[in-house]
Length: 93
Image (cartoon, rainbow, N blue to C red):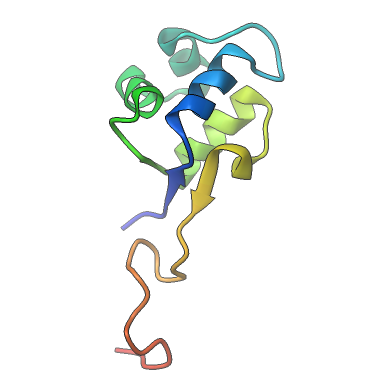
């Protein structure tokens, strides 16, 4: 199981693609090349078809954009990877 961050907004993602803090605007292919991620993932995030990204992928994207992680993504509120908070948080199973 991997940690995932939730994309705050596809609109903000597209804005960051067009206005990166570190150079010229990105298209799907150029962003994929710079980050090492798949074009499909980038397109899904930009169109809102996918709302989460693996932590490492999220960091690669914000590094390419030159923005802070919290500008684009929200970490999972649960400390237990992708699980939602347990009903009894003090009980370990």
